Amino acid sequence: MKKRNIMILMILLVIGFAAVSTTLVINGTLNIGYNEENFSSSVVYTRAETEDGTAEINQDDKNITFETNKLENVNETATLEFDVTNKSRNYDASVTIKCGLKENFESFSEYLNIETDITSPFRLESSETKTGRLVVTLKKAYDKDLETTAEIECELVAEPLERDTLGDEYVLVYEDPILNGADPVIKENLVPVTIADNGEVTYANTQKKWYSYENKEWANAVILVDSPSKEYQENDIIPESDIESYFVWIPRYKYQIFDEGNYTEAIQSKPETSIATEIQIEFESNSTNPSAGSKQGEWLTHPAFTNFDVNGFWVGKFETGYEGATSIDTAQVNAIDSSKVIVKPNVYSWRSSTVSNMFKTAYDYERNLDSHMMKNTEWGAVAYLSHSKYGINTEVRINNNSNFLTGYSAVDETDQSIYPGEYGTDSSKTLPYNISTGYKASTTGNITGIYDMSGGAWEYVGAYMPSSNDASGFSASELTTYSKYLDLYPNNTTVTSWNNRILGDATGEMGPFYYYADEDSKKRNHNSWYKNDSNFVESINPWFARGGAYNHGIIAGQFFFGRNTGDGYINAAFRLVLTSKI
Figure 1 (cartoon, rainbow, N blue to C red):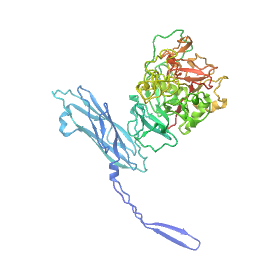
Figure 2: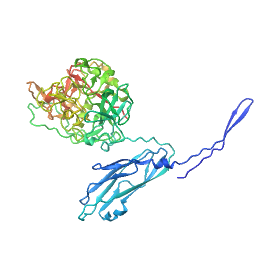
Figure 3: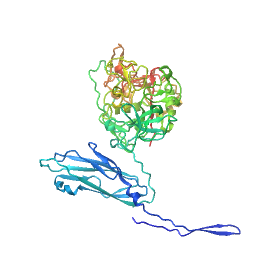
Figure 4: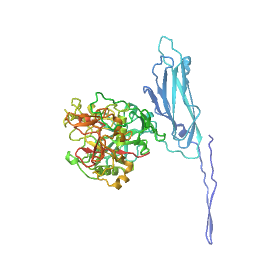
């Protein structure tokens, strides 16, 4: 690229008046040049990974150092995956990459094949990142007595290319390759965080890996109280007192339908074994055409994402609590008041409210983030992800804290194989979320997941059937106004109308269903996964309830679904969801 100087010799400005004219003359010189030093630091490596994580980028982001595992068998490979980024706003770049053995190791060329999957030269536009892979293959058996090492070297040369417009400002944000573009959306009041095993919260450095769904480490974010004691920066520890609400990211995915859920009758016996299976999931972004399967074995983009056309949504990490409640009784408030919302561990669940008041409280909480009460399909999306290889992949442990405190888990020695199960408030019965026992009540089996999906209080969700017995407090016109945030079921359903399920809502697909008596001698419908209570909505109980209560033992779980009137109950809570788009 040539340097250019442009000289502006004169600007004439003539101003006319009725009797007087004047001429103003401005002489100036404008120099325009190419900033070599600036561009030389613009094209850099922004990510480097090997199978075992032994790749490092140096401080100036210009060099990658990595070491492979030992290659012993013909066709065995070692792979380095890297991102190269153009941070310049002024220039695109033409990048050429050349890889090979260093001079002193050329004798190993007969054993090794070295190639990249990115064709040179390639154009790297302003603020663009491209991913490349360096693959080293052992093409011939190494027959020497001693193990050895060989060094390879790749050289990337970037040359500037002119642009007609200023590019976007480059902002480096970590992306999880396995999510295929369904990474967390951080905007408005959300603060990305990492949570240590002991519960300590740190403002996440989003330029580094702060979540990994392959490792069952789900992304977390918080909303701070209105006036935190300080302005937090990346890597700062955030005290619990400055946090108002915790949220966990559920990335958009499609799943393989494992059961079509077309059941209308229960089997009059008790199942001998569970048929729970790992749910097959593939992450995708909303730029991908959604899958529309409806039969067993087909793939379906989960409706919780297509309903809002989003890349994912944030879910309250815990049941919604009532700010300032100091007892079970003071958290029972039937009112609309978003200022009282907290989503935190070890707080009293907000209960005894009508569905309408729960819904409107959640709806008003963070309108800029499209906050609302969790829908049945959204509950199903979380439950299915929990039972995949990206989650705990089994039933989550019940929260058996009889004070309705959030984030608790039943102690190992308590008996939850019966109904009712053992419950209480002391450490011999129940323990908090931030210890090894507590992790078992999380959707991931670690502290990064979602809690209270089994036990605690059972949770109303935004899902109903039309009924004259609706006690939710909604008017007919409001149900229409808020229809986007409510799952609607047919008006002819009964308690065994599992065939009226919405695929993905974790109801009918949990069949076949069984009808038998529990330890209290009362007969109930149970699913065939974990024997959770499984009752569909009906005219006298038109609103769905999920999760089960602290004393429900075997019938509680992330696949529990029941029904109620929509009125307030002492053991009925709710959960928040945020579905704001990018």
